[in-house]
Amino acid sequence: MRLFALIPLIPSLLALAAAFAAPGATASAQERVENLSLVQDPRQYVGYDQNLGAEIPDDLTFTDESGKPVKLRDFAQDRPMVLALVYYSCPRLCTEVLNGSVRMLRAMERLSIGTDFQFVAVSIDPNETSEIAGRKRATYLEALGDAGPGPGGTGWNFLTGDQASITRLARTVGFRYVWDEHSEQFAHDGGILVVTPQGRISHYFFGVEFSAFDVRMALIDAAQGKIGSIVDHILLLCLHYDPVRGQYGFWIIGALRLAGIATVLALGVFMLRSIRKEKRLSRPSPQGAS
Image (cartoon, one colour):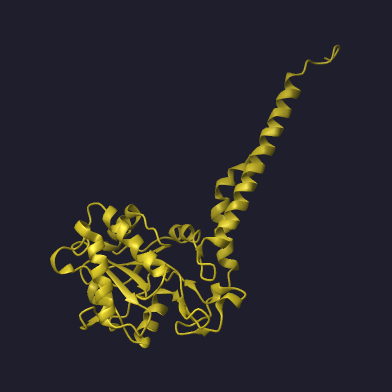
């Protein structure tokens, strides 16, 4: 029975094994590839390295949607910050990340954007301007509606910056991305981060849909300076973006499917053995047996 006690742990163990088996992060933030679809393993260029506890540099400067220079750390001076690395002309994934953020913010209870926490989107494209950021911000403030930060929109900012600032931020938070010459787009992963008022990374959330409850709890933890645990790290490995296929969970979902099949087979073997044992016990003893 000891073997069956390990069955519920199979998905997490497979996820952890896949993480160690994955190649190390070798791509720099400003790297370019001719055609990412021809790369044997795109994960060497695209993904998140979870730098829990890493500190956002206090001199890291960007430009806000009004054209004003701002320090990123200033947005997290007295409250937690949700951080999203996107680019505003992104045709698909970034829009889904921001749309998912709107749904999460609208569903969040007890915490309010602009009052209890800040939300900051930073463009990874150095060619994007504050005018583009301003239009994008107006679109998403309108989408937030009553869940928004109120008059003036203080609480959700859209920043742009030069390549040096973008590279520093990307390396600090472990965000790996690459310019794909073939598609003429940035290939990148999707997700959001939570940063403490001390400027330290406390939680990562991957994908394009984010649980309002989980993010709220992460914000409460971050407000107290708490950093996510190794358990969070293992669970987040269960979601990974395939930049070539434009899909999430391709490699790990395959592993989880195998785990599911293994679980069903193991249960089938267990039930078959139990039935056979029960039949043997129910057979009448041979006559004359002592």
